[in-house]
Amino acid sequence: MDISNGQKVLATRADLRRLGITVSNSTLLRWEARGRFPRRARLAGTSVTWFLPRD
Image 1 (cartoon, helix red, strand yellow):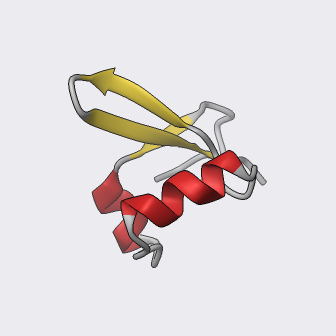
Image 2 (image 1 turned 135 degrees about the vertical axis):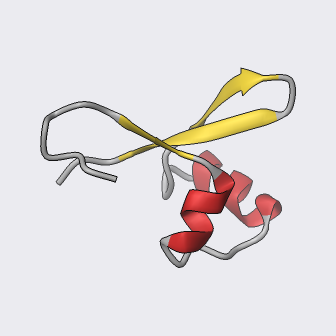
C-alpha cells in the first residue's frame, strides 16, 4: 500500500489484519463512534473499507 503519491487508500478488513489490527467488529464500531478510528465506507451490501490516514 503506497500512499506517498497523495492518493487516498482504502483498507479492507483483511488489510487491517495484515497491519496488526485484529480487534472485533464491535470494537471497531465503538472506536469509530468515539473518533478513535476512521469511519468505514460502505462499498456494496455488507462490504466495507476504511480510509487509511496519510502521515
